[in-house]
Structure formats: structure tokens, C-alpha cells
Image 1: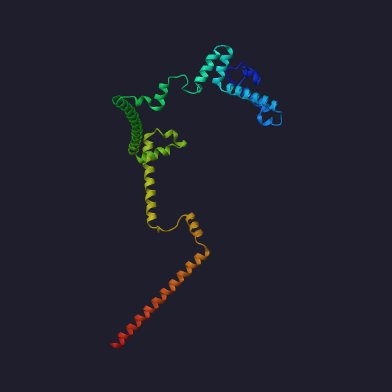
Image 2: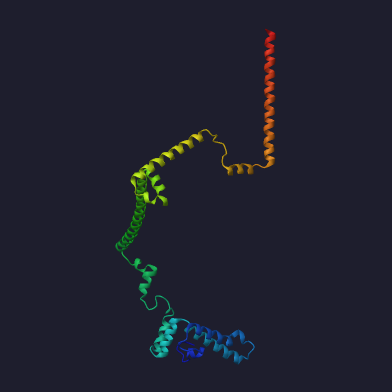
Length: 279
């Protein structure tokens, strides 16, 4: 059965010519269940043949109407806009009418897909085409490199400007400005004389406090643990048995040191007595 037979596919599926794809699909599934070959094995031979034929008709109708391109051709044929003989000839000649290059010049297809043009170009034409392609590649590469370079130069200029601004800042002035940002000193922020006096006073106090701190730190043992969390950490890391072994080892070492000192002392005494007797 072909698309050109007089049987109306819409009537075969029981849908309107304006039916949606979903309605067509549902109608096909509903009718095909009744005549599907798997469901007619128990029927007589004549009935099975009739239902198989009906199933084939439903399948062909659905295959045509479910594809928008084929459905448009079928609708045009039904409305008389396309001659049935022309449609049949066109369908027989072009089995791939639903694909991208249907109806186009095959030369264009081969040039775009398989390098047909390149195979039929002279060496000079190939060289010019390659030069043009490389010119485009180099052009966009340089544009990208320029954008990256411009970004890094802009960022570097911001860093340099920020460093210069920090270098121009005066420590005592910034301390005073920070102090005057408090709400209760809002009325004195524009008083330059008051700002200078406050800056000098605060800078002097900060320098003296820093000097005292450094002097205090010089007189302390650098290995001393002054932070509470470090004490707790040191205690947690050593279990009782380990602390006992440490103390026991220290006691043994101290005892051995005393014995060595006693032996050396006795040897020195014997040597002194020997020299005295000899004299």
C-alpha cells in the first residue's frame, strides 16, 4: 500500500485532518491493539489475514501522518495542490526527502561535507585558501591575546595605584581619622587643628605601647606557653602512662648522673691520696 491509494488515512485512524500528533498517536495505539498479530493467533485463517492487512494499513497511515514533512505532502495531495502522479514519482526518486539536503544541488552537498571543491582546486587556489584560513586564525588569536594582555595591564595599574596611595598615607593622620569616625566626634572631623593634635597624641601613645610590649617580650622565655589553648593541647597530647614514663626516665637519668659524679669524685680522691703518699 502506498501514500497514493484512495483510502483516507485520517478516516482509517478515526481522527480529524486537523488532529494533533498526540491524537494521531493515541488513535493508532488504540486501533492497532485490536488487530495486532500477537492478539489474533487464535482466530481463523481468513480473519487473521484480514486483521493483518488492517494492521499494515494502520501502520502505514501512522508512518505517514506522524512525520510532519510526509503529512504536509499527503495533505497537499488530498487537497489537490499536488498531482498524485508527481508525488509518486518524486517519492520513488527521492527516498531521503525528509533530510537536510533534500531538493538541493548535490554539488553543494559534496563541497560542504566531503571536500569536493578542495579536490578540484589548483595548487594556487589551495595556497590562497590556506593563507586566508590562517589569516583568520592569526587574527582572532591576536585579538584574544590582546584582550588578555589588556586585562592584566589594567589589573597591574590598579595594584600600582593602590600601592602609591598607601605610600602617601601618613600613619598618624590615618589613626586620627579612624578615631574621629566615631559618632560622638562627628562635629570635629573637619577641624584640622584638632585632627593634628589628636593624631600626634594617638601616634605617641601607640608608639609607647608598642615599645613597652617589645621590652616586655624581650624579658620572657620565648618557649614559654602563655596561651591557655596551648596548655590544654599540651596536656591532652600526653596520657598519664606516658607522663609517668617520662618522669621515671628523668629520675633514672638523674640517678645515673649522680652515680657517675660519685665515681668520678672517688677516683679523683684516690688519685689525690696517691700523690700525697708518694710525696
